[in-house]
Length: 245
Image: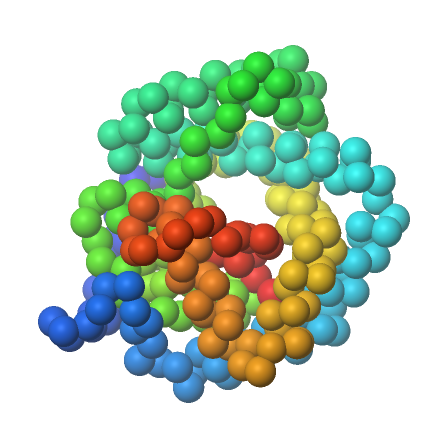
C-alpha cells in the first residue's frame, strides 16, 4: 500500500514549481495561466453541456431527503481515509472523533445513510492529504486548473492523487460495494452542482473573467481551511476545492 503512495508523492512533488523569494504568500502564483485558462474553458464547456444539466435535473427529480442520504453515505465511506490523514497530521483528537463518527453512522445511521453522529454533536474534523502536506511544511506550489476536476494547487493536486490510496476501505470492500460507493460519490457531486447552481452559475457564466474569479475564490477558501492566508471568513458556497465544474 505505502510504496506506491510515497512513490506517487515523490514523483508529483518533484514537478512542483516555486515562486521567487519576493512573492506574497497570500497572492496568486500562476505561471501556467495560459494552459490553465484552456483547461478552464474545457471545464466550462463540459459543465454547460453535461454537468449543469445533470445537476439541475438531479435536484428536481431526487427528493431533498434522499439527496441528503446519498451525500451522507458517500461522506461516511470517506471517513476512514480522513482518519488516516488525521493520524498523519498528528491530530489524535480528529482521528478519534472521526472514528467514533464512522462507527455511529455505520451502525445507528444504517450504513451512513443518516447522520446519527451529527445528532449527538459528533461532527467531522476534515482532513485530506493536501492538508497533510501543508502540515508537513510542503509549499503550496503553483495554481493549476485540472481538466474535469477544476481549481487546485500543485500541493492539493498531489493530495488528490494520494487520497486515492489512503482509504483503508478500498482495500477491504468487495468490488460491488466499491462501485456503490463510487456511484454515491458521483451522485453527491452532481447533486451539489444542482443545489448550488445559482452560486456556481454566477461565477462561471455571469462574471467578466470567470477564470480569475474561480481562481481567487478557490485560493482564498482553501487557505482559510488550512488556517493559512488572511481570509476573513469561509466563503465556500459550493466547494470549488472538492468538485470539478
